[in-house]
Image 1 (cartoon, rainbow, N blue to C red):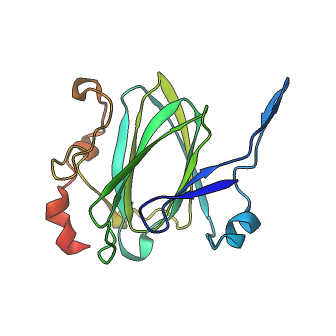
Image 2 (cartoon, rainbow, N blue to C red):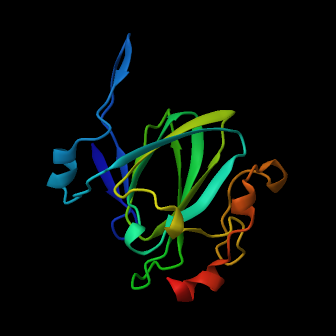
Length: 182
């Protein structure tokens, strides 16, 4: 497994070693010992999966306080633009955005530490998205950021008219309105 650091502390892109032949392919997507040997000591407690069509934007979501979640994210089918915003007050990347294309073709994954807002948009006709979390979902700690916040300036790579959002995600607050409450 290739572990590639990003400019954000503890935000890591992972590329598994894929073994392919005439039957298809095999790769190890998660091995607790391999991760621990690299100092990534996550104890994942919940697996989530979503299936979405082109233009579906899920996010930007996060859990506040003790309910914060680290995630290991990947795409099983299709292609997404995966986006995070650093909400860790004492990091130099606070308020900065990182995005990467994750797909069933490139098989890249990403470790997102606690303290990030996370979202993705589907770039292919459909996508099957999977993620492990190191903390259980807590509805009372749920929060989010507005996907089109001009201060974040995220290019979702999908025309605005083609975006499909939940009503809740259309009403998330702006970054400037929550940063003093983090």
